[in-house]
Every structure is written in C-alpha cells, then in structure tokens.
Figure 1 (cartoon, rainbow, N blue to C red):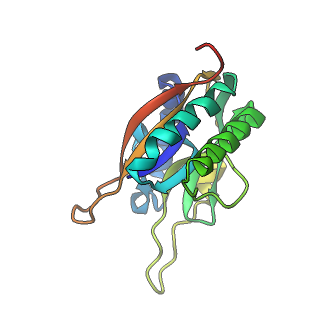
Figure 2 (figure 1 turned 90 degrees about the vertical axis):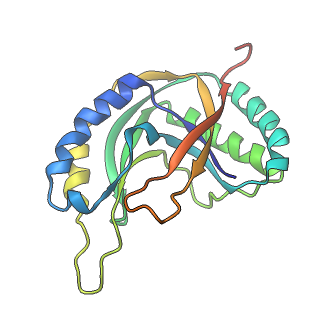
Length: 195
C-alpha cells in the first residue's frame, strides 16, 4: 500500500486557508490547475511510497516511539510559493525545527523498519494546493507566480500539533477524468510522553 506520515491541519486552519485560496480560482489559468481537495490538505512529514503490509507492525511501533519523542508544538499556515511552476503550495510557520525533527525521526523509523523512504532532499514543509499540468508542445504552461504572490501574505491561525498521522494514499485508476487521490488516515500517534 502507498503510505506517508503527515501533520493534518485542524478545521480552523483549513477554514482560513480555504478563504485565502478562494480568490485564486479567479486568476488566469486556474481552470487548468488540478486543485487539491480540502480534505486532502496536509503537511507530509515523510513519504514512504509502496510499503509491504508485513512491514507495517514494526514500522507502526517505531513511528509511535518517534512521535512520543517529540513534544507537541505550535504551527500555522503562512505564505506560499511553487516548485518549478509545477506545484503550488502554502508554507508553514511556527516551531519549524520541531517539525523538521519529527520528519527526521519518522524517516529514521521507516528506515529501521526496512522501508526505503522517497525523501532525498532537505525537508521543506509545505501543503500542496494545486498542480499544473505539463504544457502541450507549443503551449505555455500556467504561470504560478501570481498565485504565489497572492499567498505571500497568508497567515493562518496558530494551532498545537499533537499527533502524527499515518495516511494511505489511493491513486486514481486513470479511467475517471478529474479523479483525485483519496486519503485514508490509518493511525494517529500522539506526540509527547504520557499522552
């Protein structure tokens, strides 16, 4: 099964982000973007890819320990940008060293359980809002700069991250136009000792 570990924003954060994203749907090219469903908004901590189910018990035990070793911390959605004109994202602000530490520990838990992670570059917390399709030959792609500029002033409410979620990702089968990945939270592991 295809898995990742993530921090899921609470309702008050997604409500504020929804309000900030709504005007972006009126920008040129917005109809060509594949917008991420609000219920799928998350900050990936570590992407695991396809994982053999036999490895899950050992990984879950290690992920639980990794989460317990990180105290709850404050986070909020702030700003935005894009990766190479392909993915539009909202950024994070707050206790980013703690979020990075959680990502490192979750990645180590995966490796110790025999799962090769897909992360090969420095962790950069972001919440994907939309993806731009590859332009057809001779066609200009969607310019994501105006979208990123509008997200620059976004500052969502601060919340306490109190758990780390293990999420299953089911990709569309390709037969249904416009189908999006579906996400299922398999487990929530509390942060901090004694929780």
